[in-house]
Length: 189
Image (cartoon, rainbow, N blue to C red; front, side, top):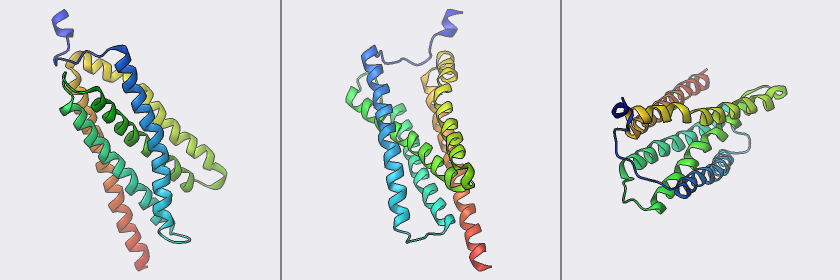
């Protein structure tokens, strides 16, 4: 029974200090990613003109969120494929920072879009619900992933994360193309 419970893949032995440093780098990246997402979307929308079409605003924000999600998928793959026992802590912390930036940035964008999409008397509640969903998802994901890691190894966890991130990116791209077709039809009418 004990042999079944052992992780399949050999893992790097982190000290508590290294684990805390990685967590801090992800959270610091998240702080930077939230600010960068807000600034980048504001900058791109400002380039659209004085009063851009609401559809153009949401498409611009969705485009930035897709870039963040693509970078998340690439960073997860890099974390999975390049981190070995001999990997530098600086490299691991850099990947953690980039991953935090790319995961927390879209949460901010979704909050902005929910505020813009809701009626004015519900915009605060809409933003709060969008932020709550993103933060609760980030908090509760630890238990199932630890369980999967214990049963199948961290390679399986990273595979699940890479597939899930790619699936979200696919849904976002489908939404992007749907908005494009809707915009074209409304302009023709």
